Length: 173
Image 1 (tube, rainbow, N blue to C red):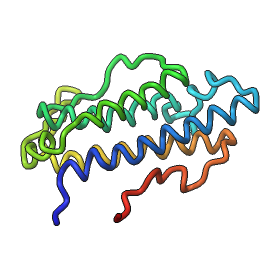
Image 2 (cartoon, rainbow, N blue to C red):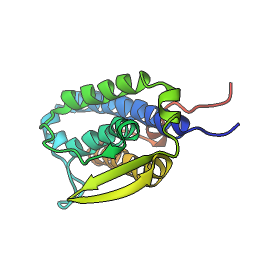
Image 3 (spheres, rainbow, N blue to C red):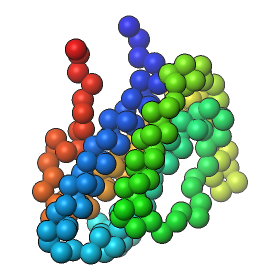
Image 4 (cartoon, rainbow, N blue to C red):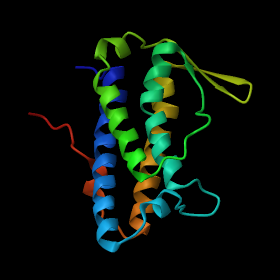
């Protein structure tokens, strides 16, 4: 059996988005017991030259649902005018992204295999196939931002482990 474009993209996004939702819930509980203001967390950065937690979660949504929308339309644009989400709005963003991805049908995505996706940035147009875009751009960005969000929460003392990042694995039944 071959692996489909849907399996490479949506199935992976859903697994990690489920983990992100769970570790954000765990973080909210941890911060509530520590009496930490969640608004401080959304502005936390690992290093001064890195973007804050808020951006990491917004990017997880953009590099999952936004990628699937780009695969279907043929064009991917960087996000603009990102709202200043607070922690609960970021949790809702993850939930809404998961819900929207759950409605994507495998045949919709698989039908775009081999089709063009153009990444437009700063007046430049970078050409990809749908598979090349997902595998060489989208997934690396998606995992980078999910990992950075996880790391920020770890840095702030949330008791997370590798299993929290892995999410529900797709094991043979």
